[in-house]
Length: 195
Image 1 (cartoon, rainbow, N blue to C red):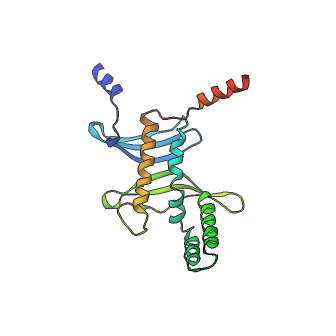
Image 2 (cartoon, one colour):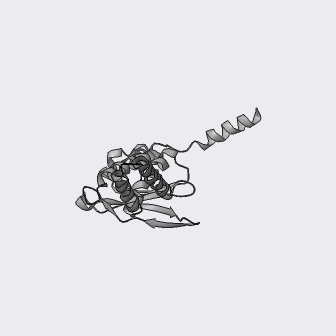
Image 3 (spheres, one colour):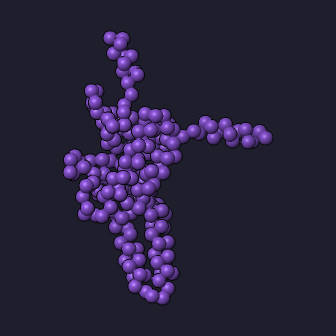
């Protein structure tokens, strides 16, 4: 019996057996729900109590433009870009304005989680987060599922690649102790203040 307990403590989950189902940033850390493949399969939920490394949020932030596209927030900007291409004079000026509006819209999006749903050719992701309103406040939401392996939207493959980056960061957070090094920052600040 003692040998089983010892084996269980030393067992490490390999990335190939890590099947992320859901990640959601919370005030303290990141809540993670995943399926473990291999001989000890099962769904595991872990509430994040320690802040993740900033790379996890950076990987989620890369999905902001996907969120904005899926919500249809960039349709007018895409039209403005096409119109700008038709203008011989001031083409660059109009295109730059359209790009600035796109950047502003994308920056209003906040991605704080992913939920993977479906299986086989219906496997995909729902991006969760919020959109800042133009005049105060925000709206929390989950965008409609983006099904990987399809080409209906035109950005499914890009979304899948970005989700794989998030999955790697979540795995590093959960199993490789890749956490925010707040204690080091606090210590550096304390030393700086002493000088």
